[in-house]
Length: 168
Image (tube, rainbow, N blue to C red; front, top):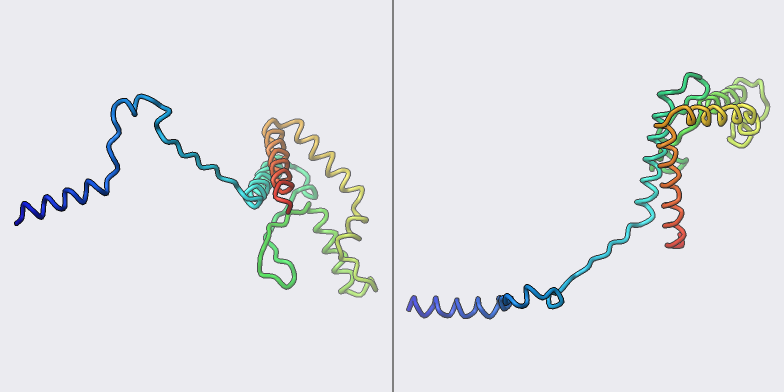
């Protein structure tokens, strides 16, 4: 009885298993089935790479920067009405002027609330030019900053290319 059960199990197992490959099939590469899986990364992947490259550059820049107003401050901020925070980075001179304009409005020394970004951009045009020259100078002096700047550019290109492919 036990032998017949073992025989039935052996027959069932042999039916379920694929036939063994012969030595001739293993030697001929055309008879081996190949399965290729191609993955496609979404644009969010490239966006995250770009954000990481930017933060990496900012960190390296801040380590070399000696001018306090030209330091770049980053902090997570959520848009009004949202709980989703995004990293926002701004030069310190810009943040200070934004705060100054808001304080002037609250103190009553200004009748108009000039603490919007467009007005502060207008007020800080000269400082922005000096800031950009300072970044360029530090980048020329440091091979590490040049490398990180190139990584940001490559990540930006990859993100833009992927975004254009997907039509987002």
